[in-house]
Length: 229
Image 1: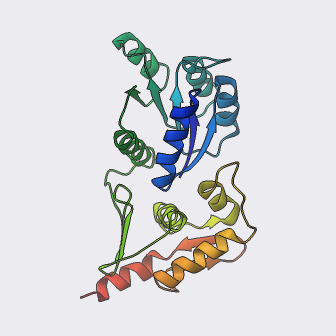
Image 2 (image 1 turned 135 degrees about the vertical axis):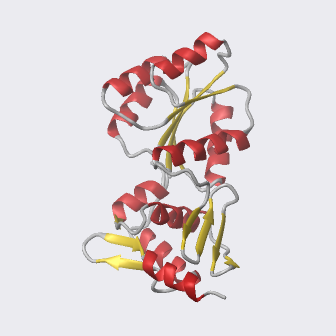
Image 3 (image 1 turned 45 degrees about the vertical axis):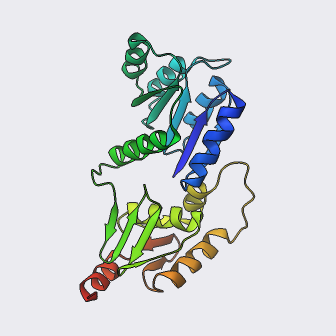
């Protein structure tokens, strides 16, 4: 999952980026409202974490213009503006949630996961496909009853594929969800992550879709679940 962080406080922004990356999210960070609006309009983000008191363009105006341009990306407001009127205004112009500063990063991540579930039309907190179970909150994966040790990007890739319910994703789309703007990415990075996942799970669980990319084979996962003791 790829998140846009909009925060002009450097120390706070660095802390949020670190926490979200540990949670297996790809994060891009901008520090003013005009840059945020441009990034939102360009698309490619699953969620926006937005401060309100920003240089160049206030956060409320970012939300208003983003919604006016047709963007439906979930927006979570982070702000020290604690008055009920400020929270009401933020939600009424199009924000999806509002968290006051100071805040706990564990709560921030829980709210992000909840918004992502809601935007995907999913109520359950875990992702399940046959014998494969993924818990985004605990960053844990079990396959046929056995816990797996995955890297952050392997976890993010598997989560992405499971959320698609067997629909194929192109390599470029996968790469955009796994890496931020400033990260160096090898040309075969996605293929390497897929190879490692296949080795840890089962070679047939992630199938190659010729001319497109990769997809989770939910039928194979279901058969493995039926065969599990």
